[in-house]
Structures are given as C-alpha cells and as structure tokens.
Length: 297
Image (cartoon, rainbow, N blue to C red):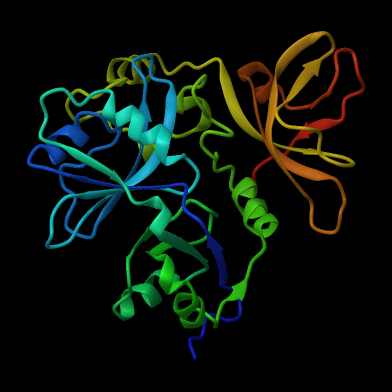
C-alpha cells in the first residue's frame, strides 16, 4: 500500500474538453494561438495556458499535451467546454494542415491531490496520460483515461480518500485559483485573475491577444482583481453583484459552503480599489455589509 499519510484525495470527474490536434502544421498553429510557450514541450509533457480573443479576453483555458510516438497534441480542459475551444481554434484555421477531433466523450478523469501523487502516477504505466492540475495549493494531478478504464483507475488509486465536489471546490477557492470561465471569462483579462505568471508568455512570438498582454505588462495596471471572500448564511445565486453603498464594486463569481455550515467562501472579481481597501461589501445597493475579503495566509 502506498504511504501518503492518509492525506491524499481522489476525485473522479468528466473532463469538459479533450481535443486531438494533428497535422503537419499542428505545432506551429497551436503556438500561434496559445498564450503560453509550446516551443520546448517534450513528448508526454504539458503546458498550461489560455485561449484569448483579439482584445486579450479569456475564452477558455487548457493544458496542451504533446502526444507520444504517434505525434500530434492533446488539448485538455477540466472546465472549459470542448465546443468553445474547438470553435476558437477552428475560426483561425485557414490554409493550415491541421485537424481537430473532439474525443471528449470517450474519456474520464481522476484528480489526485496530495504530496507524492505525481510520483505515484509516474511509477507505473498508466492508461491515458496525466499532467499537473489546478485544484489546490498542494501538489495535484489530473489523470485522463479511457472511459472504459474508470473502474480500474479508481481501484488503482484506492489508497486515496475519495473527495466530494465541495471538498475540491474548497481547496481551489482557498488557493484563489480561478475557474475558467466561471471566475475569469470572456469579459475578463488574465491579469485580473492573477494568471499572468502561470499562463502567459511574454517572450514567445505573436499569438492572438499578445499585443494586449504586452501592453498590460508594460503598464502593470488592471481595473479589477480576483479576491477571496467570506459571507454568512447560504451563498447567493451566482454571479451575484457586490456593492459599496450605491456603487457596484464587482461580483461574486464562485462560492462553496464552509465546512461545518458556517457560511460560505468564494472568489469575487472586484475593483482594484475594493481589493486593496479590504472591508466588507453588500449583496444589494445600500444593503448591510455582509461579504468580506479574506486575507491569504
């Protein structure tokens, strides 16, 4: 039995997107569309990044995985829908030798959260493939496998405690990791969600949205920021507008009940003034302050 001190979690899920991208121009095409640098990716390796529009707004996120000896790439996303990613890519295929196949329906996923989970995945041959996840501040991995292997994958990871969706959501929110497109989406910039370090390359060649990213890097200014917040009672219907008196400061984008039922925690996209000032906001114009920022420990 593997010794992970009883702290590792396993969470089965259905991936939102798994596209197979192939063709002679696949590498150059993806490099010209993806926000991060794919230039040094090795077979089996992965890079996390974003699919932006011309104004630098976030359409979707994914990991791009270099396929093994058969060549090509996989585009995998936990939350961004395959139809959205495929349409974003397909709109820019002109004379490129690129084929996009949506294989999402035939795959399932298992998230593994906890120190040593990556080493366990790498220790033995696994059906499918795996890559670092974005579920928690702790080490976490996404293992994608053929749908028919779900039972055997779960049995192989039976040493880990099975997690509920709310457990995983609490970890993500505690780490202030934005879900895309729920927390940061088509009306938002990557920098507003703190994604510029993990998801943006400022040194690679041109890609869609690159000029806006370069401008933001030079100015260092955005008007909004994603912050962790806490409220009492039940979480409101999302997204929920947040107010300071009669001035709208932003909105609560995601929320999950606090363990033990003592209110909720969530992520809110608010004005930079509200983010820096801290304090509490209300859920209605002129209402009582009930949603307060949580300082990251």
